[in-house]
Amino acid sequence: EVFQHNPMAVTFGAMVLVCQLAWPVFNERRRILSVQFGIGANYGIQFALLDAWSGAGIAGLGATQTAVAFFAGDRRWLRKMGLAFLPVVVIVCYATWSGPSPLLALCACSLVMMGRLQNDTLRLRLFLLAASPFGISHDICVGAIPALCGALSSAVIASVMLVRELRDRGLLPRSGSLNAA
Image 1 (cartoon, rainbow, N blue to C red):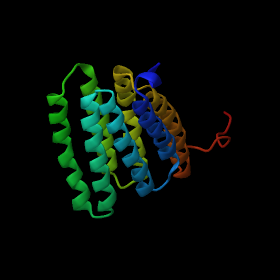
Image 2 (spheres, rainbow, N blue to C red; image 1 turned 60 degrees about the vertical axis):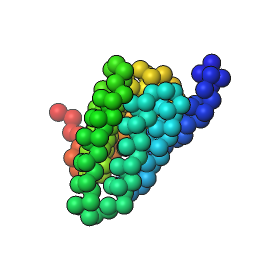
Image 3 (cartoon, rainbow, N blue to C red; image 1 turned 180 degrees about the vertical axis):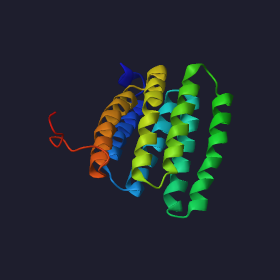
Image 4 (cartoon, rainbow, N blue to C red; image 1 turned 120 degrees about the vertical axis):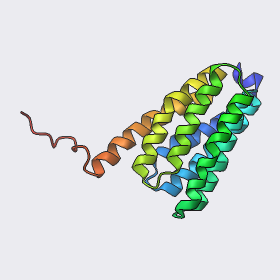
């Protein structure tokens, strides 16, 4: 029924799904950011097609901020310019207020934006994972079913990859290496 009503929104939602399933498996910041750009751009279009203008505006800003973070590379001053996007997100939320969904989008986007400013992939993962409950709730509120499936799947994959990275860094014991007491 959703596909018949708005097939283009479902199509862009499916592209979000592909990107959400892909980003957690990457180990390099630039690769993660590349896929994050795809998430933001496709979310923006999908939400616009669903008349969820808060989500569309915030996702568009997120895609733009991702591009800035990607091209900034190691230039710390340029990466820090990404903070300038946060007040704009608040303004978009206020201007498109329609209930709890803009607030959820604001929380998710703010955490993701802060994550993109991180140089370390572990901190980047932590911020992106912390944004998941807010993004999932927003997808439920606006009826973005494919994006919701992607967000749920992405959160699971990201959690597994986080544990893997923590183990690789020696911050968690490897399975089977705990001594039975």
